[in-house]
Image (tube, rainbow, N blue to C red; front, side):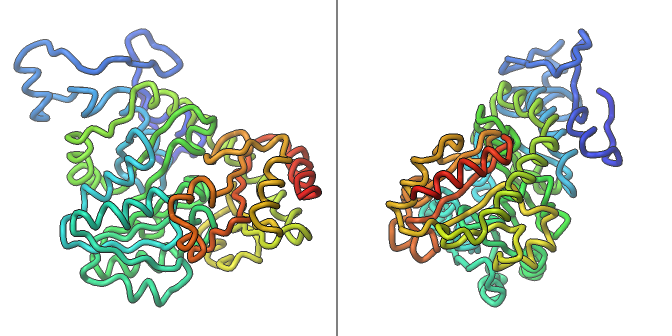
Length: 396
């Protein structure tokens, strides 16, 4: 395996880092479809398991394709020392929680979360005697009050799903350090290219690789990155023994996808910025939220910690749910979907799909109205996307 140093530029690392080649010398990373390994001797088997002899042992522990992907993700993420990949983004989030927490612990999170994250924190963790406090992303005093010496873990999404609220990572990191709490950032919406939570003080960063890292809607996956000591001594034993592992095929697909990540993200974000600037102030739109616009309520924080506004736009259509559905049904290029991060542009109605399980009262409290639309901007021609959106707005 050739060594690719962190000093090399990101585009180079995402093409070449972590490659493991067979004796055949293939130029594309090979796909290893096997679950277990044999050893040349009983002594070698013993050495693999006690760590005295390097090598793979079992697919649930590690695997050449997982190793290549994990090494490449570490090469991508600024400040990361180690990585574990999982079968989905939610498997990654749950593994973080359950590997680190115990009965009696306290968790703090931002109030607006992806519904499954909200469910884990508010419904599953309490069954294990773990309490929680939810805080508005922009409430600096709320974070100070919520994070105490009893807090074991703080979890944030920034920008938040689906309202794009921004949390000040560095400020929350400072509070976590004082309290001794593990600080976890879900970095999906900002993307790993435009926000670097570990360099801002976070302990752990996580991704649903299902989104922009895959980028083409083919696989489910998750990734957790951070310091080697926590990843290998806390998270890894939990993942190895409970089995939320990623398949070799998925790892292979994602390894290949990383080669084009900078090219794709650049186009996603270029398109999103152009669309957001053009649609802002449209008479059919009640609100348009985009981290790259000065009108964003936390624009100053977004500008400080994000190098771009990102690929996601949130907007509210005037006229409520009926108008929102009419708009969605009029779109001809955008697909109606609950997903995001695809090369194809996607439009989501969170209140009836991704966040429907929260209930109307909770959604209202979180600002997830029946007229809210989340746009995941793809890599198509920006003018075509804009024409499609303007056509939908014209008849809603």
